[in-house]
Length: 165
Image 1 (cartoon, helix red, strand yellow):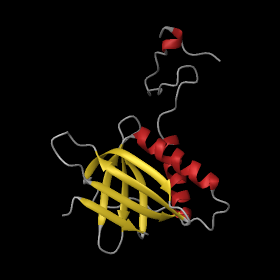
Image 2 (tube, rainbow, N blue to C red):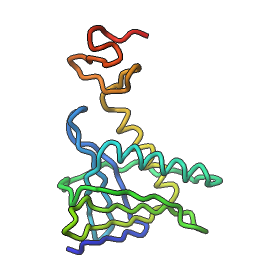
Image 3 (cartoon, one colour):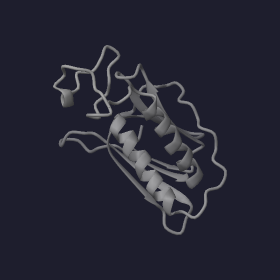
Image 4 (cartoon, helix red, strand yellow):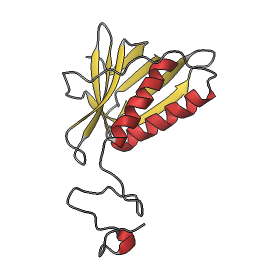
């Protein structure tokens, strides 16, 4: 298998999360006729990807009809964990470029995946990512840390009382 992948207008791109809130693994899948690729992401990377796409789409005049979100499907085993993500608009085009680079040590050459997707698919991906993030644990309105099912010792209240608004 090649260490670099280039998907120009792939058939499907999907974001998903495996596991329960607080213990989820985030993945992105890219599928076309010849390849099926799964990459592992962190929640903060999904949030950054969503924010970057939203900034790019905010500069585009108009979006067409957004395709429906695709679900993640087996195989779910990631090819690699993502270290860096770069997002850009391809000039003079209605495409969004997303580069994923493997989180790798200094001794090895990192794998890379490049996606060129339509602005409409990018919009669907941003919505799907936002829904994934919002489906997680609620955050404390005082400190911003996640609230666990068994409670939350908020540092803003020294952990001694429940947060009050």
